[in-house]
Image 1: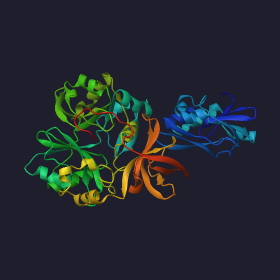
Image 2: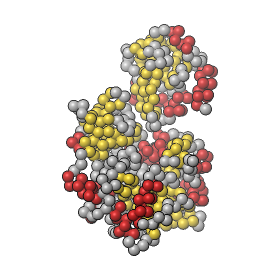
Image 3: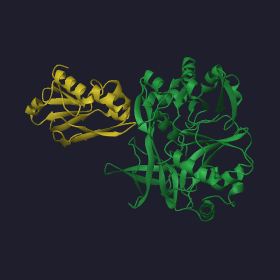
Image 4: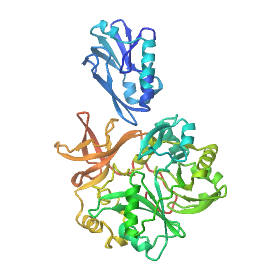
Length: 126
Length: 366
């Protein structure tokens, strides 16, 4: 995941052409515990960088999912809505949340690379 | 200063994540996580440290039963030796100070009280019995083992325990220590609760683990009890809810409804005239979770109640909740709407429990 970027809200994004795939990090799932509910943005809707773009709930609590960049939602992963336990099983792979057609690629520059994120995650959870 | 149970070091050894609960540092989960721990209890066997609960023993004297009947709505006179009953301490207005289990042992009553309420309960009981020296036994731990394989596992550690009937107890020994075991629990599964000296608590639980049971945290305890439709004090019942409103009328002994006990006037009135709100089960039509305090609406958008507990039930694979709803909307299958994050989620009133398994004969409820 060398071209994957990370946000302080524990989302990841991988860019493929104009389209970014977004999910939540393994570290986030470990903090949340067993995820039992997921809500995603509507296909075709526009989301703004750092705005709410979904919800995940564990047996313990609800948490908002934020989008790390702005854009139009072009695809959502219905399989994680149908079976939210997939998010714990494969958060940085098959259990992506939604795909965005990016509005402004330069927004990616505000995000962290893998090394920076790992350090950030370690520091904030200590 | 946060309190620890005698099993604290064992929880640590098994990688517990701790939370503060009623002044105690208690395991919320271990490395398996809540859903797996829930399923282990439903399918095999789980061990719960409930030592934070109060264990009160009251020696028999001439008028002890009469005095306890002044504060408990339970028929204690017909309670057999080694039999347990679910009961309450109530306020004059019928509100509940605590729910509890009372057992008639050979020479004393044993009362198990909720951790958060036990000091207040103790004061009420002390005043009623006019015995200021009464105190909880802090030298004892309380361990529950729950789930279908628990009977066989516990039998391997304590012989003859499987002969116990539901809501009945008896004295047994473990490593030459006297222990008291009842067939009971709060998960909707067959199981046992063991009261034993602190000094043997760790070795006892280690033996249960070696025979195939697993430590389970408070997180799974909550999903298990909610699926079983059981109340959590401070959430589903409190000082502003009566046993009638909480749909726990069955726990009031029939031959005591016309008797005098604290709260009896209000209970009798509510049984005769009905109540305006009732505790019911609620099943959202989607997987969205309706947590405590979620508002409940009817189809005309009138607020008709509030959720008191809500979670995802792993064994029923659905979102589940319970709460109080106005009597007019409390019938099974009534369509209601839950306000979650600003949206109205359709839901249906349903019977409790959400998950049902048959208990070992002896008594139908709890």
